Image (cartoon, rainbow, N blue to C red; front, side):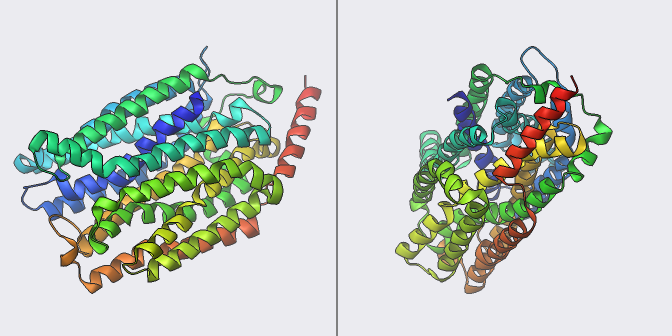
Length: 460
């Protein structure tokens, strides 16, 4: 339960940062400021650039966590520190920094850059520490599947619940502060306060309620040299192929989810109904996640991964030709969100099993380093989605005070290209790579664990 609650707060934070922060930037951060469009483009570029640069430090962060030795284990200290600092920083980011952009643009850029680097760095420590705990809690693939399942239930409730309440919540707080019944800067600020409290609080609960297991496989784990971090990753061929498949998928998924609000606001002209997306995503997530262990047992996670992507591509087709039909859009939304948790869990379990695969192949156990790959890939996707949302908002005329009536046919075509066509192609590529290159099955992992135990017992 404590691990699931950690996932709830963690994904609440992730959605707020990867999706709604840029919505805040494009709509409220520079309200009333001259050259707002230029500042939106500049801030968007900074966010993308910072996140892409810091991504290369994630494996190093993983090695720092792997080398941590405390009486609380190696994950909990970073979970607590990263959780609390990042919680404070997200509240700061959802402000206009005291109107600094209007009075001193250069100073604003410097302060914003430093603040976002602090946020992203501590969020990375928390993110990697949280998801790296799974191989430390169990060596059994089926047990890990159960842990991943309860975590994804928490994630689904956190991420999709945030999507469901973001519009009414920001509108409500804006009304309390200003008397205007619309989304405004004050509403976004209090939204960030709630996200920070939930994220930081649940990180503390996870640290309090979990305990690392100590098997012979983990006891024989030496410290990782920083110079060997990238070598350990690149030598793990199954990890690399899975990473290539998942990054294509993650970019497609995050880009689409990030622009769905623009779809409701500017194409359907019904932003007040956007909460339905959160409701659909929550229901489909809570339906799909418990099915994961059952489906994996019946058809293996290989076919769960590939088949789920096929369903999402069908959803893209309906989005493209749905027009303004609420029924078709609803069906497309269901097809898009229903398989997501199944794809995520299939990828997460494969990456987790790659810990023992790499240990047997290379002789070194890298838990946090190996598991840092999954958050790294999601952050790449999040960074690119931030850039694309800002780009689409400006190019398609979906920024500032624009309404649905202002959107041209060209703007709709631009939106459809980035929201559905390109992501659909990326998802197809992800399925093809997984089908042809990823061989690390559940049976193969069980054999690897047996070989490791025999090998390490003989070395005693």
